[in-house]
Amino acid sequence: MEHLERCAWFLRGTLVRAAVRRYLPWALAASMLAGSLLKELSPLPESYLSNKRNVLNVYFVKMAWAWTFSLLLPFIALTNYHLTGKAGLVLRRLSTLLVGTAIWYVCTTLFSNIEHYTGSCFQSPALEGLRNEHQSKQQCHGEGGFWHGFDISGHSFLLTFCALMIVEEMAVLHEVRTDRSHCLHAAITSLAVALGFLTFIWVWMFLCTAVYFHNLSQKVFGTLFGLLGWYGTYGFWYLKSFSPGLPPQSSSLNLKQHSYKE
Image 1 (cartoon, rainbow, N blue to C red):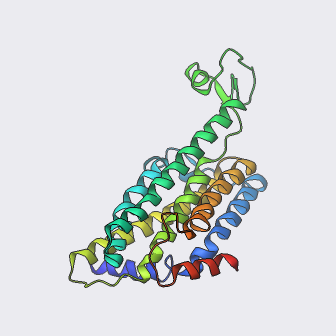
Image 2: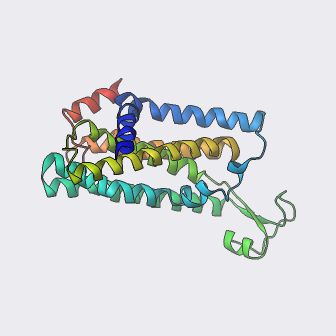
Image 3: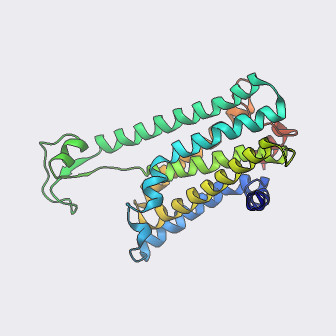
């Protein structure tokens, strides 16, 4: 438990700070552009992380929303109920996960449709030998072909959205005060540490995507959708009364409004 406490203390001094919530979106956008330029001008040598079968990509990034959802669900429920004691308010706040799921589904479906309608099937990765008989990506791959369309980076979108959402929800830790001997303290601390490590994985894999995969325009659109999903909710809609609302904090609405006006 002592190690968890140290990790939680570190997280309070990093991810939970208001400055992180304010500047992380800009940092992600800047790192995406810098990594993309590096990929175009001076590509890095192949490495374990440039292999799509690496452990972090297969078991974490491919299921990024599932990981984010499954850890935020108990975290939001426990911290919000501890602070408010109102089940109705907790359910309202948990609806942020339904909104996030809708954003994830709509955007990934849109990306898939764009790739389908802008794509064609070729005989080789060099885009040689157009195969007009295959009208879908599934048919093309099934026959050993290579589908080429405008493939908006789903990784750039989802990792941006998940990292920013976790950081927003972890802001509630500034308000949480629990007895260290109580099981609730252990549960919240464990979830906070898990979410913190998950955020670091999302940011690290976002950087790997920037330097190893997709072209610049595909990553720009992916990151832009992630930023819009975050800002449209936490920066705009959740400030309104007819919304899931922000995490319970002292003067949270005023602080949030001031933050986005700057």
